[in-house]
Image (cartoon, rainbow, N blue to C red; front, side, top):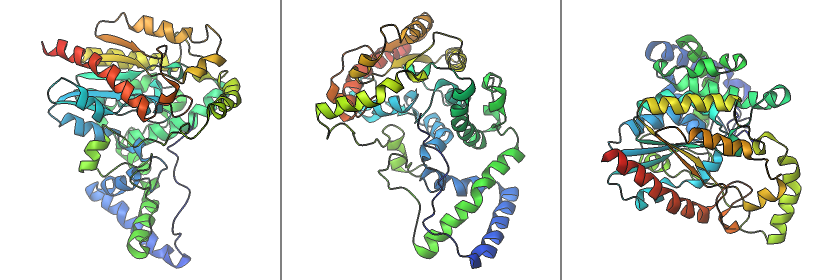
Length: 386
């Protein structure tokens, strides 16, 4: 699991020692401004979103995104999940394909995510009042962790939970907090003092960034087409981005069949032994999170679609015949719930040309996804409206 949201460790322009006093004064001023007007988040957030302060601005978009969803006055579909679903779903294509009048399709999936990390946003998601929520369930969604595996997940959890909790409203605290492992609860900022401390960690870097822009015309912001760049909140680009995020270029388009097979021969023997290809049927932290998420959405009268995006068909050549049974059993369990629709496409035939890499669709794959998924969503929405 690649962590895409770690703090940026490079600086386009490092202040000279003579600037330290100025920076210290500015930091103190920002803290005072925060205490008096609570405006520091508004000043820092743009630098989070554009990648100046963290390596993936997408992780800072969630709650502002849901405010946009809440105000759209549309029939709304929201997708949450990992980079697998993020790469698969083109919400703009689905808006063009749908037969539902005034429908919006939002892609809130993000790199490295799994049900356990995403349940934190559920109260805000429900408050946005979507009609349908797509939840990714794939082999990468159903693993658990202890020991060394826990150590690997902890770094991601710490970053995500702190960033989400410092940007969420107090009323978005929910029962998800008690599902978190005790080791993860310490990453949640529960009161204003803790939130202020979390924001202050970014204050000096934000000041350095803004000084660099104003004085030297140099910035750490990512390019507007970068995978990790998020446009300014409220802009036309922001509105488009929430449905159609930036995607990576395909890794396979320039490779021969032999080169692609060599890639799989190199990475899959080890990858096949990891948790992401050994899903459990129940009992993991991710299953507990799924239980919470699905029940909360259903209790709010929101339809749920469990969506299984495909992985490259050659992946299965490296797996044992029953290795993904835990995923199949999970689908069978949740499919029994009223209000839940299972759209499992992992086992469907997909052309090899539809993939950017081992587990992400490319532009061709997104077109196929759009054509296959949109009619299913239309049917669910039509039933709701009639």
